Structure formats: structure tokens, C-alpha cells
Image (cartoon, rainbow, N blue to C red; front, top):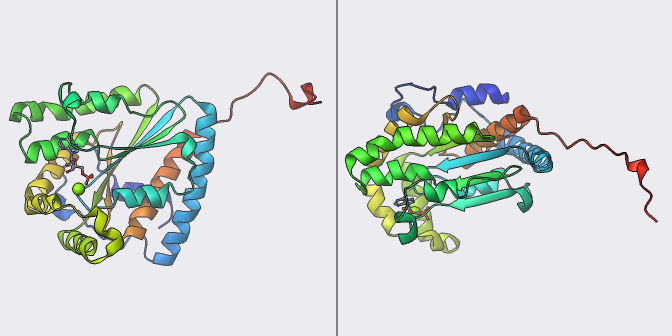
Length: 273
Ligand code: AMP
Ligand code: MG
């Protein structure tokens, strides 16, 4: 399957759909059958994304916000590396969201998010996002229940505001199985070059697996909107994850069709002595 619209259709959560997370496949062998082909395609997409990003930057009228959300080891960092590896650093920003600082906690939860949304001309990538406030926030009861409940609509309104102000939003939930997470956590212990990623706290979150899955399901049901739908990306295979996301990012940018600015002068008007 290489037509990006078909891939997008296969992973997009339709607004209002009563998705069940248990029904969402983390493999999706139907999307890309062959690893080599998928890697080749993703590499081609990465080059095309770079060319499109150059136009977006030159045009300076619109922005693309890519939200990467997923549990530990779901491949958020790997996606940045795998999909935007041909894109120069000029017009791309990557923002990780960790535990809020004291200063951030003194504001409303969207304050720190709005401050780092991409400027016109930029692709902004969120590694985790405001969705943590309805995920870890919900699971660990970091705010009163009614405050958490209110956030879904607040987030929808926030994203609508952004989308009406020139920011196209692509939200990807990287969906891995419990077995795959186990394998990837074990690699962090076994492989010296991955050991720096080890965080014993991840085991605490793993114990809350079902609670997190439930929180993700509610998130998908309540915040997949027409202006910013979720895409559930099968993430057990890194190469398939990259091919899916690269296809959708490229297709979206092509749809935006950014243009180099027009000029009132011609190159021949000038002579460089
Ligand atoms: P990592 O992405 O693995 O480096 O870890 C970042 C950590 O920050 C994760 O455990 C997140 O759950 C946590 N985090 C991110 N955003 C929030 C938030 N708004 N409230 C509480 N914890 C958060
Ligand atoms: Mg972590």
C-alpha cells in the first residue's frame, strides 16, 4: 500500500468513533508488507519532506505541528530520526515535554505548550505533548477529576484555534504492544549503547499499563476532531512506523502545497559587479 490517502484512511480515528484500544493492531502487516520496500519508500519520503519544508520556510505563511504521543519505548525519538533525517535543522524544531517545572505548574497546563507551537514557516515536532495532561495526569491523578474532564474540550478548542491560525496539526499515537515494550526495555539493560535510556521509573508506568491504555482510549475518543484527528500508528515494527508517518507527513505537506514567494523583480534587473 503506497497511496498515502489509503494509509491515512487506515490509521485515522474518525471523529466521534468509539474506538476500542484493544481492537487496534500494533502490527498492521496489511499496511506495508516488505521491510526493504518500506525503508526505501520512507527514505524517499524523507527527501520529499525536506524539499517541501524548504518551500514552507520560504513561504512563511503556515506551520505544521507534528504531535508524537506514546508510552515509554513506543519510538518517539526514533520517529524524529527516521522521518525527519533529511530535513535540515533550519526550519524544524523538536520540543520534548517532561514533568512540568515549578514555573510551568504556576500557569495553566497549555501555557508551556502554546509558547512553543511552531512559527509560520516551521515544522514543529512535539515529543510528548499537552496530551500528557490527560494521560499521566489522569492515571496519576495529578489534578482533580473534574479539571481533567474539562481538559478534553479545552484541548479541542486550543487545537481549533491553532488550526484556524495557520497551523496544520498531525497527531500520531505510537501504538506498541506490551510484549514489544518488554523487549525494548530489556534492550536498554542489555545493550551498553542503549543503557543511557534506562529509567527505572518506566517500570512503575509499566505496572499501570491498563490504566494508561484506558487513558489513551478516552483521549482517542474525545480528541480526534475534524481539524486535528488522531492517527494510530502501528509501532511494533520501527520500519513500518516510519513508513506510515513519513507517508502522512509528506502527503499533508503536498496538500498544503507551499509556494516560494513571487517577486516584482527579475534576476536580470540586477548586475553583480
Ligand atoms: P521521557 O519522555 O521518557 O523522557 O519522560 C518524560 C516524563 O515526563 C514522562 O514520564 C511523562 O509522563 C512526564 N510528563 C510529561 N508531561 C507531563 C505532565 N504534563 N505532567 C506530568 N508528567 C509529565
Ligand atoms: Mg520515560
